[in-house]
Amino acid sequence: MPAAGILVSDFDGTMTERDFYGLVRARWWPDGNEDPWQDYLAGRISHFDALNRFFARIDADEPAVVPMLAAMHLDPDLGQAVGRLQAAGWEVVVASAGCAWYIDRLLAHAGVCVTVHANPGRLEPGHGLVMDLPRHSRFFDPRIGIAKQAVVRDALARHRQVAFAGDGPPDLEPALLVAPELRFARGFLAERLQQQGQPFRPYAVWSEIADRLLATA
Image 1: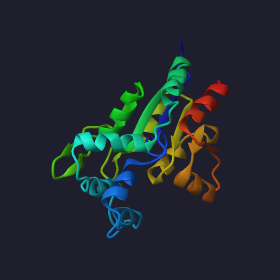
Image 2: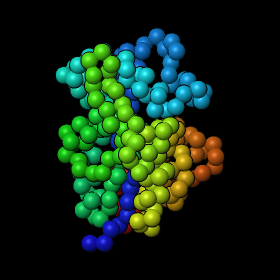
Image 3: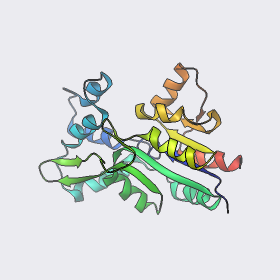
Image 4: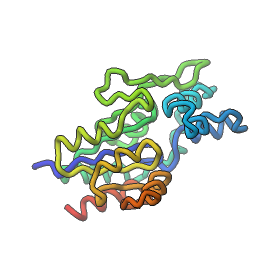
């Protein structure tokens, strides 16, 4: 079967309802003092550094942190949605500025097997979740770890039909590389695209994206 297309998708807030950093922020940074996210939005630190500062606050071992992942609310229909896309010839690629430590666990639990480009990391006692820059990745970006726009450009070089789904600030540039009818957005990304007058297709849960791509096949 010839490939139908490639879907490049963000993970936190896209395949899930909540971001992992948001859960960490609420539990271990409740007062909001010197909030790394505000420093990131103001351009004082990088996206990668902001996440690493949040993750460094995790004061729990793996058996205590893993149950938190359920609170991210992965789309319950993700497994069957990815399966239907793959059966129809779609390649699904996850491109994330987050950490592979929790992404891999959630996808494996859902029975999802896709290519994942994300920052490697590990839980270290006394240091929280330590994320490393993926310096050996061909999509390496020192600001966020994985350059999603590079992942999308690679997909465009391999197939004429490439879709992108995202929700956050690092998703704007890659979203603008794909055709409007294949651009799926919600949250911050949707607001910014609206501000720029750029068309997109909204979604509530990730599995809706699969439904729409398959409906137009």
